[in-house]
Amino acid sequence: MTAYSTPTQQVTNNAAVIFDRTASQNGSAISHADNTASFTISEPGTYFATYNGTAAPLANAQLPETNLVQFTLNGTAQNGASTQHIFTTANETSAQSASLVFTVASVPATLELISSGGTYNYSGVTMNIFKIG
Image (cartoon, rainbow, N blue to C red; front, side, top):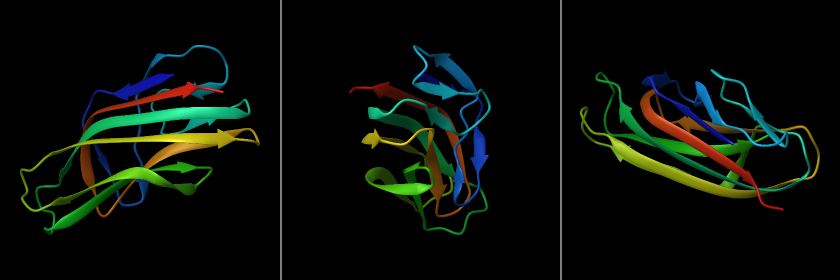
């Protein structure tokens, strides 16, 4: 499964990043509806997810400001699956990536990417999810 978003989007504190397009979907274990943040896992197993994107603070942000992007599974933050950046200037951008290997025992399960620490602009976001076992 590959999903991405082409327009820059503002994501508020503790909200999920939205992926406006589904580029590729093979099989039925993982699904995503365009213009949503949620990825639905419908088969038990082990999965690998990877996120890449760019974040930037708002022009009027109170700096310094710490941005944290973290995977959640069924609303629970996944330890070791995050990326963080401290913004110190308004025109700064941060290329971000995070990955996660996770097991789903009970379906359906929902995977999301949550942004916290303030409101940020995200661009060039991509999510890839693979069933590996």
